Image 1 (tube, one colour):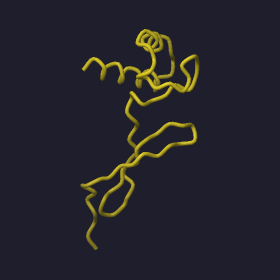
Image 2 (image 1 turned 30 degrees about the vertical axis):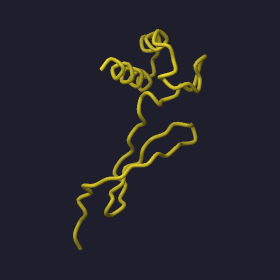
Image 3 (image 1 turned 90 degrees about the vertical axis):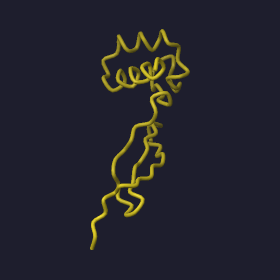
Length: 89
């Protein structure tokens, strides 16, 4: 039996219980799971504070800058950084 090289992939969104969406990548040929791909930073929603349930693109830039400098959650800070860098590019 020939082993699949998983060259061609397909992705589709999966919404988790906490409301966050990631994309599941699978091989088109064999259906094997490859990896989870995080959602686009602009679609990421805050889960706390006065901007709870708002997407990063809906939140004022000055608040995002404040959040980046004053939050200890490294994953959140990375999401905000990625979003802000994408806005500049």
